[in-house]
Amino acid sequence: MIAPKPLRADSPRSERSSPGTQLLLRYLQNLPPYRWTQSRLVKWGLTGRSAAVAVPYFWLLLFFLVPFLIVLKIAFSDTQIAMPPYQPLFQWAGEKVLTIKLNLGNFLFLVEDNLYWKAYMNSVKVAAISTVLCLLIGYPMAYAIARADATRRNMLLMMVILPFWTSFLLRVYAWIGLLKTNGLINNFLMWVGVIDQPIVMLQTDFAIYVGIVYSYLPFMILPLYSNLEKLDLTLLEAAADLGCRPFKAFLKVTLPLSKPGIYAGSMLVFIPAVGEFVIPSLLGAPESLMIGKVLWTEFFSNRDWPVASAVAIALLTLLVIPIGFLMHLQNEEARAARR
Amino acid sequence: MNTRIPIFRTASLVLGFAFLYIPILSLVVYSFNKSRLVTVWGGFSTQWYGRLFQNEQILDAAWLSLKIAATTATGATILGTLAGLALARFGAFKGRALLSGMTTAPLVMPEVITGLSLLLLFVALEQLIGWPQGRGQTTIVIAHITLTMAYVTVIVQSRLSTLDDSLEEAAMDLGARPAKIFFVITLPIIAPALISGWLLAFTISLDDLVITSFVSGPGSSTLPMVIFSKVRLGVSPDINALASIMVLIVTIGVVLAGVMLSRQEKRRQKDMALAAGTSTK
Image (cartoon, rainbow over all chains, first blue to last red; front, side, top):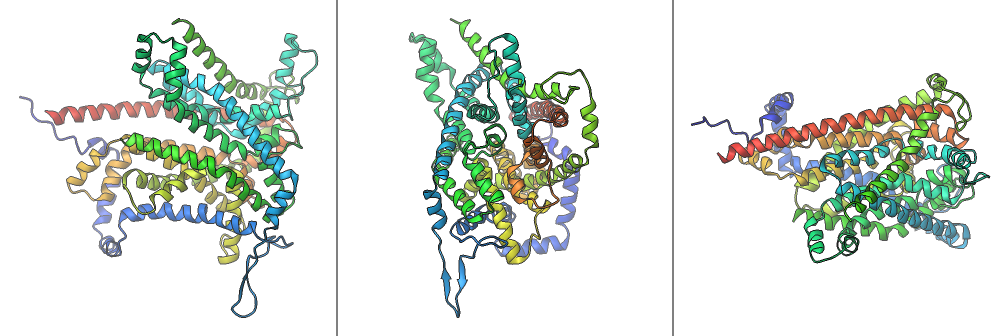
């Protein structure tokens, strides 16, 4: 009979990996101040658990939620030439009289000036077209990776992620060298003899599309891959047994089942692309209108904080629908995973 | 029939990866170009690397960016782990939906909005309580932590939700305190997730331009800000040299991390199999 091995449930590996931490903890837990503090905290209902929630909660409230309320407030304020360049919303007028001056002028200004509307529409158009292009390039890639051998799959995935780790700014910069009038692509095409005259590509909408598709492609591929990887292949076999041709099986089985992946990937590309600033300002024409660029100019060049805030609020309102949809999808997926 | 589809798949992979990698390769190749004109080949030279290391402005900015990125990554990993742990393990608690929303929203929020709102917060805070005084490294780190902790949270949460909590339950049954369970069991298990979260936060912080431009002050120009102002004026070969160095570091880092993580994962699976094998005996 084999002697029973020591129980491995308490994972000797983890003990091995952190003996120092353990020793320190044991020492700390035996100190009177530790015990006293702990008993106090437990008395006030503050356990380690609630503290663990409270710290990130407080951080996000202060640095994520409150800032939006401030933006909202300033969007309703008047401009003034001072630092900070806006008038307070709440003012004490005489004794105990609080006046609230809501200024809708900034929003009226947005509606009246054609420029903002055009910039919004153009941003949405550019983001939508880029999203479709990402899907057209990303779907076959994600599909091919999901169907590759298990051994090669990880390497292929790493190759998708690798560009994402290198600087976004430098990857956009690389396209300047490629797309310039005397850049690599034009030189190559002229050398091959396809064209006689260089094509103007930099500082056009085409360059913006290329830049966005290039930068956001991994965001499309990864959710699609994780969806396609989970696909039950027996469904396709069943379809084939019933006489369905592979392409039709793809249209009838794979494509509908990969809808969550398509939605998630599209949102991950579309939403940041709408507010994109770096790509249009490096690759697009100087007069190209994208809402992210407009906000930047209002803020840094015109120093009009209230109008910049109003632009931000308007942009956010337009994005609430897709963002809400994305969160709904993620919750659904989390629920499905828990099941 | 069977030969046609792999051809299509291979073609889409080859073309896709060509699209992803040719721009990066062109950056690296032209960093060794003798000519100032980035697109005309004038012979092999390493002069731009030499120029790069004499450029005080770029070196200072790079050092500042590295400091900010390291601080950010550490802070984001701590906060993100706590948030991920709360979301994955604490079941339903008051305000869970809000926390989950606040951790996913920064992932998709356009950067111009996040940057603007954080700057307005810092200005309002300074008026109200006198902190933070002016804008610079501190405000950049705070902004970056807020942005990147979302990524860490998602990574930690998904890692925890794929692992069953039987080990933690066993420890609890044996009378271990929650804090001890966390440090002795949960933390070693999710260590790979923490490492990738830290690295991701580090890279995002190192790379961020838009949010940083909003919340930085005079004298705190990070590397992306310097690159952006240079690139706006046109291509310059020393930026190519800088890019090549960064690509090299990232490639080594990602490959090493990949090898390490897969090895660790294999060892963990072996341990789990062993543990399962002995417990059934």
